[in-house]
Image 1 (cartoon, one colour):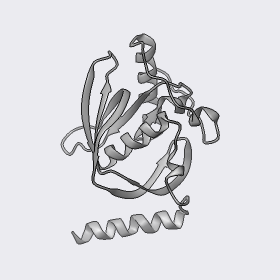
Image 2 (cartoon, rainbow, N blue to C red; image 1 turned 135 degrees about the vertical axis):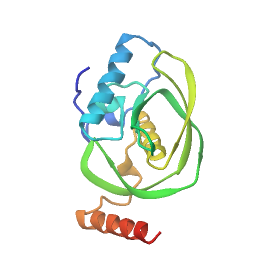
Image 3 (cartoon, helix red, strand yellow; image 1 turned 135 degrees about the horizontal axis):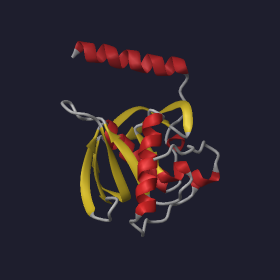
Image 4 (cartoon, helix red, strand yellow; image 1 turned 180 degrees about the horizontal axis):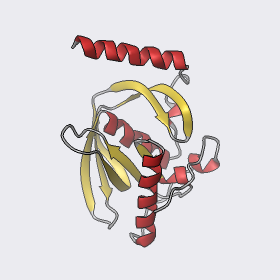
Length: 173
């Protein structure tokens, strides 16, 4: 496994539509392994292949909704959202736009159909942050970034205020 360079906003690869993965071989396995290592090293919760310069439909997402277990990486090849419902709105960032956050509305629950690294089809559900990450990473596969969905990039003061209100609300529950 190796760390890959994460492309930054403005790189033309981030605005391209990705092609489907057709070959489920050692090169794909290496890409998925490298993407997971790169995402974890960057403290991210998701990473799409175009963010490392590969224009293929592959993403990795960190499953964080594991109350009694360890977080783990979900690999999605040729993913598509087949169901989405609910709504959540919170600050969203991106490893390709370091330090920037904007308020983005996303579904609070999604079901994704995808292939695994060996080409086998499966479906998986995500809620809350995982649902957000699924949507965010799949947007990358079509050349879109979260900055297209938010009104503005939040200042540090706005971000701090948001999280202070969230903590206060959690304390009142």
